[in-house]
Image (cartoon, rainbow, N blue to C red):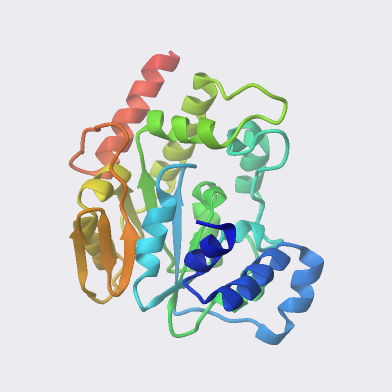
Length: 283
């Protein structure tokens, strides 16, 4: 498939319209251009806020796309923290997909002030619809859940959990430290534990749904149905046929797990088990 065809497929638009939309998305990342482009949109507030969180390469994108298939949910085509000046993506430095290297900055951010709601509403305004819920997926939001509750009272979270070995393989496949070499096992294990111990502590029963990536891949229709129920979304037709999950009228390719994994009774049980293993290995 050509690059142009991939752009059209990604945005689910005719090629001409998809190219214009892609240009807007890329331009929006630059603060100076964004300050001009957002003028016609003003500030918008959605019906409700949903934040999808999890580690790099944990399956957050496929879960996000499935939820976005619901007609009452809108969202951005890229991570929101690169589309605003109100959030730090914690990615600066020499460690792509390795924000754990910036742990001190992350902890300072957690101890600081919550982000400004009005700026986020302005910066994300082209993708916000007042009659729909707004779903935002940024890896950095995994580490600022308390701030997001302060900024957007009543918001909901979906936390995606995946086996740390598969997360590490995905990171190594896609990213390397800019100084060269590759990420070491200890670093990636510590990063996984940092992410999920933080989310486990920050999650609250009344607003946080945990989702196991392994369960999602093996039983996608059941997992999406459960998430819709926890997010209080109206039922839509969902069916799983072969490697295709249909959510409403939108098809999604569901690739099999690269390695057979245990499916736990719950994502929280899975998370705690992996944290215990990493803690034992690090001791």
